[in-house]
Length: 462
Image 1 (cartoon, helix red, strand yellow):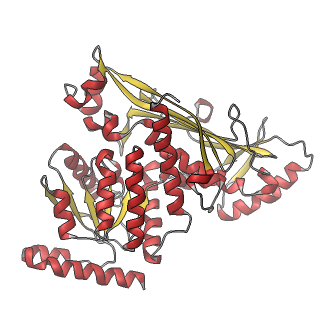
Image 2: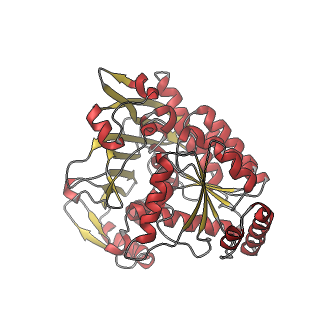
């Protein structure tokens, strides 16, 4: 029923716009009658293109793009074109582009679709979110949806507006779909394997997650060119409110699955810290193709070295459980390596650990390491593990000196880029249902409270 309503609504939107389009545009706009139609706004981050690396059964291939003119929108269009022209399983997106300083106002007045995709300059993103949901448009937004305390307050208003206007606002949490993170959560729900989640202490947290990222990397086989504003924390956000969003989300999602959190009662910040990654002019040129630092970065330059506050650490409790999340940005990974992730959840019977270092050939590997002295643990583990194998056929236990390694078939290791389609498909399921799970909105609010308040605290030197 919801799909039919979306189709009717979209048809109405198209009809309203027929009077100001050409005959060619009218024909193109109506050639695919599908319930969902994308509007891409100011696509300044490569994640915008990754949402379109796949086609979707319920999404019109015609995409309306509204942006300011410049290299950001061009880079986005170039990536989509590469997906359209690739030899294997090419996409079939048709991009209709409007560029101009009034791109947002134009989008809001025309409403050429019903799902706004936002992945770009984070300084403007929260405002774009709020105005989109105010206009009764659904929004799928790249993280982070807020980068400071003022943005958090506006984001709360956006969620209230979305509920009032019966639209869905959702952020792109790709890390939930990385198989080792998924299995870590699954195993933590099995008492015979994990036991009970420990409370931990400030010096020995029960849950810890660390991500190491790199400014210079390859995406879809090509060296990534980042916009110069990406290195301005006023526009991109500091590391504490950017990548850390994923880590805070995984703590909530893994430790308290499907539980509604109250940010005012369940979260207590203990300590925070931030630091800068330094870049030389030649490194900046390599990753941005810009010969000079733009004026807005001069504040962060000392003796020709750019200081980017991309590193952060948050120590806090969530419903009494001590957690620590940290993110580190280096310029470039050593050859043969890449971004890495470390995660540990401590249970009364075993610790669940994801490692991604040299021993794992820089691929994430999940381990079960027994901490209890129960002699019957291995038998109970093997029996309980069968319930996970039923959900994920092919995974196996491999005993080692410290415990067990989870061996995972290659079919589950689809890579970071594929996770965008998985998030988008899940979001589309929610759109069909007409609602998000009860816990998603309060937990998104809790997540952004944690990151933005941590940044505020770190800047105050606490």
